[in-house]
Figure 1 (cartoon, one colour):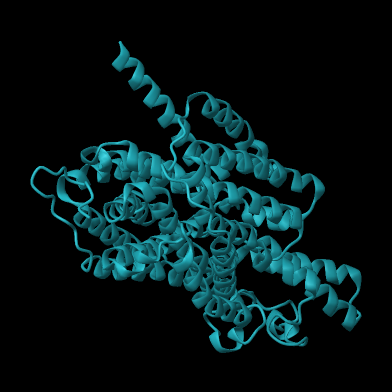
Figure 2 (cartoon, helix red, strand yellow; figure 1 turned 180 degrees about the vertical axis):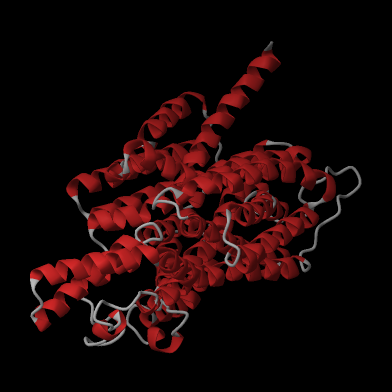
Length: 574
């Protein structure tokens, strides 16, 4: 009876931690299908809109080492529940930002959300990584990896579902959904969670934390603003070089502080251990791979001609296979070792991303998309979470599990922060050619001149368009491009008619005739839009594939320890 009661208690504790882990990871992707909707509603351009994701990544990265160290000092329970509370409050104010109509308020609230998220994932993972016996550690971390992977990937689908249920005009509900869940977790956590903390509490490394946060923010902000298609000029801007210089200047200061600290926020000995360094670099790579997912909904909308905001549903395929793969990978680690499992995951991710870039972008249909998503999903399941957590815990002391996993999450955030900037650059670079190509695909105007020649009477190739029409073209997707082209054509015809003094009746007849011709060319216009945008997606997915292959090579340098006689597989061999 006592054993049954104890088991029930463990289950309740696991549910509280896993539920928090789920909503924390879910929010990474839930905004993805709504990003363009939010941008349009709040009247911001795409380059500003990407900060909805960027600000979360930056604040999350800055919070991770602080929360990990606080958990070591004051206990996982209080830090975890405090993080849940912050996450819930941030979610509430994210939703209220729509009612206020403030993009700035949304960004601040996203930062608060992220600070909470920075304490949820590492603390929950550390609890599972240390509370289970070594021979069950892979299984336990597999469960964590499964929940984390499903939530991370399913987030886009959940976002699409919420937009469908409440309507795109009510996007705030993608944030409000977190509030009651957070409240329930806090109440349950107060009642059932134990408070595990380090036996010897040392003074907090305040200076180390402050300098590390500034360094992380400087590095990530500088890299986020670097245009990887125009490195030299963009590096010279005040949004890049001062921040990268600040990071470099503070690095020796941080090392000096940490060497003198009684309990450093970041254990510098990690960087003297080859296996830990390999693990940390692999964490950056998995962060890059993970961020490739955020562009799949938009890619699916483009190739399948889906309405904006609904592409998240296709990620269910990827989430399902990742969700199955993660716990299976945990069991396989206990049996075959972490290198084999992670190697398979990286290979599958590379194969899926290559198929997506080289096949699906050329043969745009649901079958080729599904094949690539299955491969990436399996790869994600065997890559994200479980293996790297396992590798890090195997090379560090149990008493520093919170800090070790926080370091792992911090380093992963470099990949998750930089990758979207590079991938957006690929897509934006392709988008620059969009006006010329779309206008070039249009039939000649009724007087025999081309739309391109009229537009070029301005400042050339799209610059001749009025600002409102330029924004209309920029906000187009494959389902709206034909209608927006008609608006463009009507404007150009009316301007030409005004200049030539055509009678109104003749203008109306010319408009109707030309709009009918656009309908006849609708397939060509949509195909031009799709192929142009797919060039950008191809570059983004090739980056994911290349990163996975680099990770596969790097994995060969990790030394997987063999258990000593009488030692359980997975127990640290230090």
